[in-house]
Image (cartoon, rainbow, N blue to C red):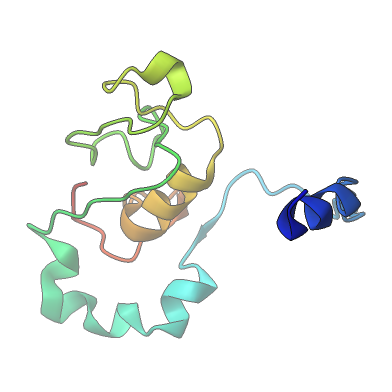
Length: 122
């Protein structure tokens, strides 16, 4: 048995980090802290908020009917075995890809968070 296999077998127990939900916020209207930290709002006017920019996100997929993203998605491809390997089904069964896409390009609609580049497609 390889050293790596032995390490894996010793660590086979998975434990969750305990947490407690403090509150659930249904509606927010703010610029996320990460977007503020990189000072994106300071250049939005100069850059026309990403108008004409197309970005590719390679991640867990994307929720194509998400209200902040549905008008932004111009295509996609599944490179995994998820959804029986259907290359045209790039739905997000994890949530991370949708989160990343929202951080980049969430629609400016006075509901939810603003994305980094507000007028781009991916």
